[in-house]
Image (tube, rainbow, N blue to C red):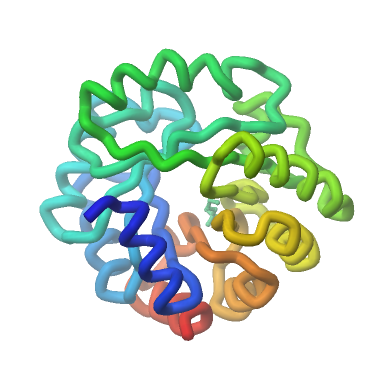
Length: 246
Ligand code: 1GP
């Protein structure tokens, strides 16, 4: 079955999914595999692989292969450019950074990467990527104009545009490792406006309570990256998964 269909079925069944983000630049492939195995044991639904810097080439390929060796969970690329593609993954979030000021991140990497996605046989999952303040490293790299946290109406405007452009997923990103995750009020406004389009929320989510607040506001998927790099992976993922699933 296609990865997107699997994710949608789990959302239907459990109310929400959990995605574990692994940055190939942060550790050796064997360590990435250990994190993925711990996350799988803790109940995560898929492994996202990507990062703003250095997630390319041999390091990326070897990380994907090591992760696939230790878990049957879907592997979804989360590329910051066309260089973030690997033929060994199952799918790719085929994303456009809609609030970038730089056309490279809105359509150019996508055009250059599309033939590679086809050649590699990756399943493209169409996604709008929106950077919310503070935005972290990815805001700087992606030339984004981060949406102010206290302006949900601006996030709604971009989310509606994404829906009308035919995207099936919208990622509200506060930035990896930030202190302030996306505010629940903004998630609620976006979900109310776009209905059946799936909302992914990530950046600064480190515990079950925060994740639960996001899902209660309407998030369909929670992403955690930094939290799994910091301690016991399995128990951290279990805490978050237990908090967000029915
Ligand atoms: C970054 O939203 C993700 O793209 C994950 O953020 O590292 O803060 O969990 P964290």
